[in-house]
Image 1 (cartoon, rainbow, N blue to C red):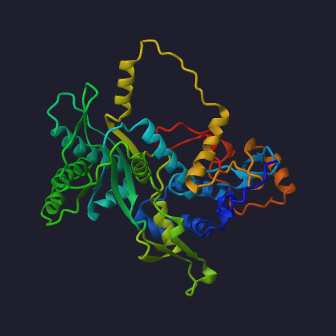
Image 2: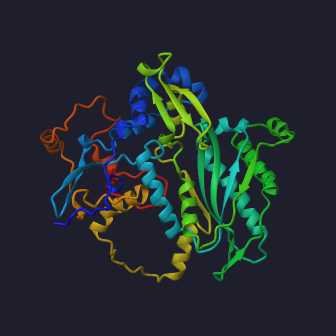
Image 3: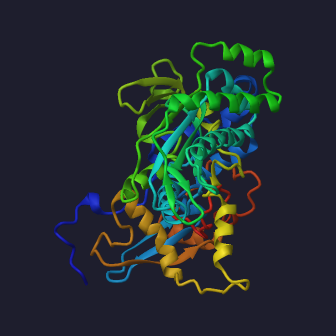
Length: 447
């Protein structure tokens, strides 16, 4: 048996999370039922109608990592030490743990499968407050906002190239949130700093002036909203008379291909979570001075704070939960699925060759361990007792077996909330990946 290393500290040892101990979990568990009940009267005028999908997301989050819903057995091959690891809910934005895994994996995937070895920049497109309400009440407009940004990018980069067939590209993510969870739809784009040419070359672009692009973006958005019947010519005329239009375009510094970490960080940033549970403090009713539950939320600057009624804070949060099949990231031009498919088709034979996948089942399951290690700087498959190699030896899904094991370990508890809406079994949700990315669906996401 391996002896524990003297360098191994408590901080280096992976411990499965306990979501129920967090302020965020306590806030959600205490107020989600009330939120649904009072939504139509208190929040519908401000945030639109209640989306049933939101309740399913909340219920799944409350079960995330819960051993009663199934778990994996992880065992050390050397000393026999074992622990149980609950399944994850995989819900976007609402579950901090699952979304963080998604962020890390997306950054790796985008860098390795989409972005080419050319310089890139970040482009950010923002709209004035007056127009944001239309996107809140009609979420289908968010995809059209992404298209407006792409139209400006395409026109700008194509203009600087005199070559025939020059093709720009972009990966564009839509964000709906501001620093204090206010509804602020805007887009973040990762854009090659130039155009791809037919011969395989890349033509660099001169530094674009963001101020010159704001007018074009304003025209795109106002025209789109008029076409969708949201605004009239009178509204457009009024907004065009403003001294400051409220439209804003930001273009970041150039990121060179050899700065892989910088590019991966940018890829993560465009899909980052709408909030940070580390920056929130939940004050329950019995601890509040005025008898009302509160949430104190700190801005990114670490200094500015805002106090919310707990129910209000949760209401703000659920407005940023994407719909079940709502895309939040799109690929355009050279990076679009169509362009990638045409390039592959041009290089392939008429009869496709079936290539064996060399990735083993063991490697596939260890993907979870790699993500955990990258996020928390610890390896969950290193034994905390002897530093031997731990392995996932079984997935426990049968309800009777789950109950028997947990009762034996003294971990069985009675659930205190109703099952998710339409939930027949817990396992189908674990295999149904409803996100918007091109990442392959993972059979089991562990905690």
